[in-house]
Length: 122
Picture 1 (cartoon, rainbow, N blue to C red):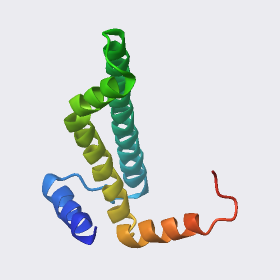
Picture 2 (picture 1 turned 30 degrees about the horizontal axis):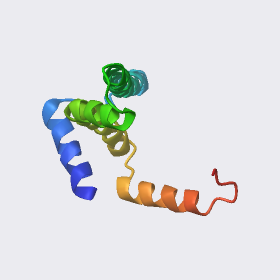
Picture 3 (picture 1 turned 180 degrees about the vertical axis):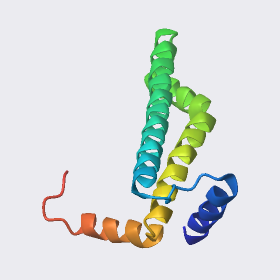
């Protein structure tokens, strides 16, 4: 994870995609813009899920068993889902880097916190 985070920091700098830190208003605008871009990518991932469910339904209507229809639909969207999730990850890493957070430390710390919760969902 550390290598990925460092790679993205360099990549964003190379591409000129860093969060603007010129002054408060430009930083605020840049953070909000990047947040909107992240939510757009999350929506594009949701669209891929919708395609999978529609293709599954179409397969069922064409005589496939439910599980087979779903497996085929999932496989047909695999590459596009990977691209959309990569876009999401890129924006998340931009925020991690801007706020000088360690992705690995944050992730494992949060998973430990969830594991130890008293009010776990079942």
